[in-house]
Image (tube, rainbow, N blue to C red; front, side, top):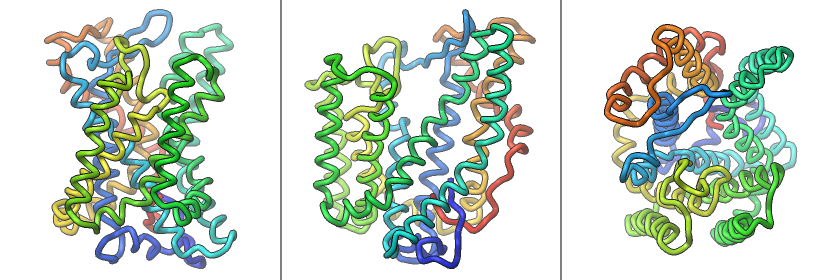
Length: 377
């Protein structure tokens, strides 16, 4: 997910990402790898680990709540914090040389110019199908459309943080880690107010999304320093984050799973809460620890990472429609899809990786890959 480069301004040259790389040379290929790998995990999880059935509309779930111990895997496979951590790191780097509000405006325009257009075809299709379903009185179809575009919450939240990035950078320069600490405390307070029923409604929930992910984004401003810092700091950050996750589960009343399940009274992700901040801290330390090993691999595969980056928005935009289409084909061909989490369901998982991929390939042609100047969003 990248933004348009405008060579005439300081914040929009390809060299703006230099500060994000410890070596200070060109693109930070480690962060490219992290985002590409995280996207693969997201798509694979949605395709292979979603239970699907149609009652009076689509009903989806996942095997986490029904598989003992699987919640622990979500502490590694819930990769959304990595996107916001990397985004914060790259935004801080790009804004480092911005000196005027004009520079800040160019930064925002560039990212909107690259992130928004690829999603417009999907939104146009969703609006057309949704309106058609509503006109025919098919509320189930409308709910299906809403479900299909639900993953776009990430892009909407990310774009808000792009708008706030110049301000967040100034807060970072003035307050350092105190800004992250204060943000985490505020998230904890909002969690308690929400649980007590004092905060309710769609607007407050959307504000919780922005608040929590803004704290993770702000934490990402410190990623570069941690990666180039002492190993003890990296290990302390990683182990401290996982320890805080354990504290959250054991004493603070948060569910252990980092994906929502029907067996938990609340979800740590919807809306995101303090556990997301703890997970981001753990993943930040883990990334810093792995950085030297990852860099040796990425330095040999720059071309592959460039291709992955060019197709990232295309894959993100269309992967849920590919899942829905394959599910529909399966229902027509073989009847109701097996959605009970048992041995048969697990044996079918490879089919639900390959099938949606085959459907996705022609869909990907609807959005051109980003072949423009490469600069991370």
